[in-house]
Amino acid sequence: MNHLGKLISDTRCQAACLSTDLLRTEISHSIRDLDGAISRLYQVSPGARNATEVFDAAGDVIATALITALYVTELTTRPAPHVIRLDLSPN
Image: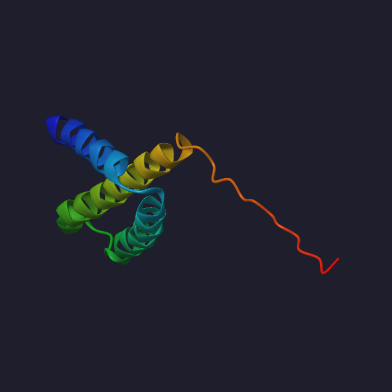
């Protein structure tokens, strides 16, 4: 569990240091990584001799999902960008 606590703490610190644009990019990469981790988990052949492989693949899915969730949580704490609309007319 100490590893999990350190992962959470490090990810929160890293996310807090990123600009909003970079954080959005990291979220996008994390979602892509999560998709890959899920694909690897489903590629593991069932069987008792592959228990370690299944365990490791499942752990990768959980860790990647956690990192993605922490990034999204950080993004939701930030103020929404303000958009100014300016209509120009020739009159």
